[in-house]
View (spheres, rainbow, N blue to C red):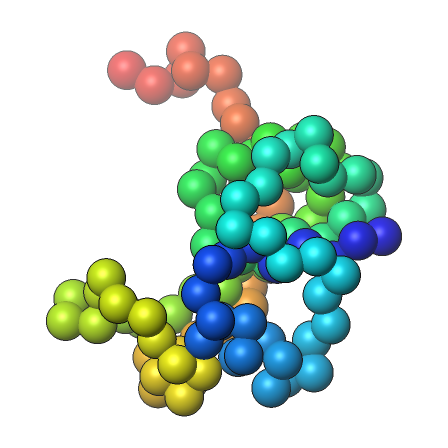
Amino acid sequence: MTRWFVSRHAGAHDWLAERGLRVDRQVAHLTPPQVEPGDLVIGTLPINLVAALCARGARYLHLALELPAEARGRELSAAELDRYGARLTCYEVRELPSDIVG
């Protein structure tokens, strides 16, 4: 099993490290073919990518936080991530047929 962390933000990496969470590979971008069944992916990924990862048998932990508008678009430190309630939340996502919409 490989533990992936998908982020280009140093503060997010520091936040994980401060919690003793080990990652094997830190990448700025990830494509589903890179991931094997049983791998763990941590990040803030778009839902369609999360669905594709889950379909390959990976687990996904979302780095969630309550980010106010004034804090968006800039680098955040690990302390700021704490202040904005950063936490890891496990999601299992699957794509449904589009005929159920509309």
